[in-house]
Image 1 (cartoon, rainbow, N blue to C red):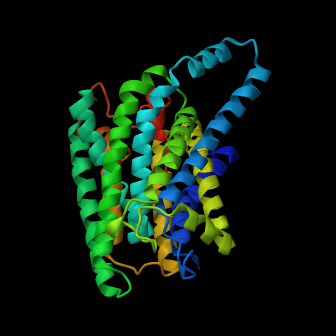
Image 2 (image 1 turned 45 degrees about the horizontal axis):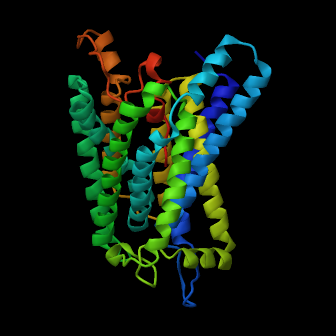
Image 3 (image 1 turned 60 degrees about the vertical axis):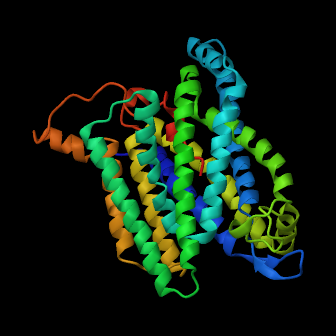
Length: 384
């Protein structure tokens, strides 16, 4: 079936804004500006950037209530809207605090990791979320994984190892890159996926029973995350950061210095605004793609944006071409397809190569079940 113009636009918005989200964050890390010591240095303020990211997530909440208001005015007396209103209001708001803390921790770890590693590797290594989410869904939610999903987890793990090795080889060929820094950045990003998997398990266990719409989930988590991290930025100004600190004072985060650098170089304002708006549009487009097309299409488009980020990073010489990276990326995509029951397994099943009934209780990030796409909303919303 041919796509409509609306569907094509949504797909393009998702790929473009998703790519901009990662690239703008990495661009901000590379922009130089005068700091409080009068030195011209790169903008290395990961926790401050993570806080601005939550502003973008909060915009999803604005979008959700604006859409709800429009539909309420158009269909004030319809049964459908009455049910929708009950769903969006009848739940305790405090339940978002725990996943918001996980979101805040994961986002902060990813921003710190992005400083040390490449933008393309950052995007590819996020595929580790499938491994940890699958394992946690078995351990804590009593889910059963199909054989193809275990094979998918194995393929994703192999792909992650190849991407990590490619980073090591790439840094060995580039004297400007610190090998220890690259490894540290990659490990931080993988650790962030463990936290994200924990977030999804919490959401599945405590939030999804209320059937909260995806944009509302990410919006409330953005709001809780923003206020929590904003408070934490105060003690971070005094806590030594060690090797994880890249500011001149050697603390976890120097927020006044971040504002001064932004003031001294307007390009930083542009990079941060791009990051904020792109995360909002990306989440909105992602939810819309899942609704208009399918969660399978969402996964394919997400793979395309990873490819876009990799090609762009090489084109602007943020990194060098390393042959293991596309191989690792390809294995990652195959693993994701196996895990999410996309293309490969249905093709083999249609040809009679494999058979068997899909077990009940699919894992939380399995988005191929059309009946569960709205229920597993946060699994379809990307906080970064």
